[in-house]
Structure formats: C-alpha cells, structure tokens
Image 1 (tube, one colour):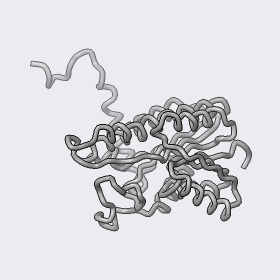
Image 2 (cartoon, helix red, strand yellow):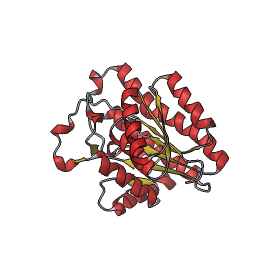
Image 3 (tube, one colour):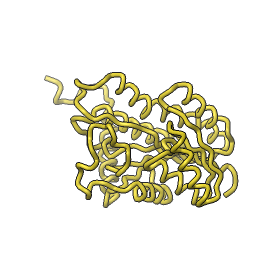
Image 4 (cartoon, one colour):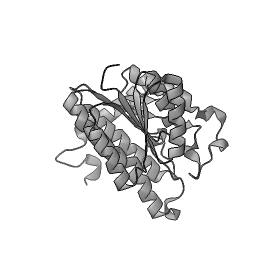
Length: 262
C-alpha cells in the first residue's frame, strides 16, 4: 500500500477497537492505536506486530480530557501519513435520567459527541489537502431503538447518524469516504458498569467483536454509507431512509399544517 497508510483507531485496547486494529493491519495499514490503558495498548500492539509485521504506535490518551484530545487532534491535522480514522472510542450509561450523575453524563457526551466531532474535523483538514481518506464513525443500534434508560446514550449515537449523513453530503464530490457503523449488542467490556449486563441478554442478540468488525469492513468494501451489522435485508434501511426523505419538502413552510389551525 502506498503512502499515506496509517490507520488511527481510538478505543483500541479492547473489543471492537482491538479487532479493527488487527484487521486493518492485515489489510496493509500501519497503525496508531489510542486508548487510556497503555498496558493493554502495548499488548495489542505487540500481538499485531508479531502477526503482521506492520508498524504500530500507541498513544495513551483519555479523549474526554482536553489536553489528551488536543494531542491527537494535532497529530491528525498535521501527519500526512494518516489515511483512515476509526472513531470507535465511546462509553455508555444506562438508567433513569432523574437518578443519573450529571457529571457522568457530561463525560459521556464529551466522549461520544465532542471528541468524535473534533477528531473528525482534525482528520478532514489533512484528508481535504490530499483529496483522499476514510472516516469510520461507530454509532449504535440504539440510535434507532431508543429505550427509556438510554436517553443520553441514544441521543449521542443519534448525533453520530446526523453528523455522518451531513458529512457524506458535504464530501460527496471528493475522494473522502465517511461510513457510519451500527452495532447491536456486541460481547465486549463496553457493558461493564453500564447498568445493563450483556450476560443477561439472549445469545441470539449478541454478536462477537470479530464478526462485528468483519461485517463493518465488508460494508465499507461494498461502499455502504450506513452499515447496520445484523439487519438481514438492507432494503429495510432504504425504506426507512426513503420515508425520512418524504418529510423534507414539508418540514419548512410558510403556514402551519391544517391540523394546527382552527
């Protein structure tokens, strides 16, 4: 693979992030792996170097911390070798909003929305200069399947949908690709401390991280802008999106709808 050939993966120390790192290395990318836990990052990096021979750099960073986030932003904005960004880092808190810790919710929003937005913006600065690049944004099935206990998490993942769709339109005539990925329940440490135990879910609801990433990359290879990993028939997404499009001509008019007028 010719330069640029570095894939940056956030949340890369475990779960889908670690699998993305492995799969992208096997596709010929060198890696910059980002997560809070350096010990785990080093272990992932060593395994990938041993199995693929690719160059792997690690950056221990908390992307909810402004200083750490700025360090990665600067790298994305200035490193001409970066070819792909996987915005995989994220977190969740499930539970009734009235009982939630506001500080915990603020950190969740920072990680799932602010950090993803800023990293994407930084990467696009370089991608736009070069006229090429790929961004993969991890959303969630809960962007659509909104639950009583998922108000903030579903809200942050719905943001990723709108953000990605807007970018896809903005970048349609460039060489830059943006994909949104929608995992359902995936068997990872993501659930630890979330308020929902993945072990309580039926096995038929829960996908392995390996299968999830392989499906996501197959969707990327197929040119899908939105990849819903377990949706059996993509026509159902097309119908959903077509229904949304029918609303658009009537969302802004000079008079209210008849049902609101006496």
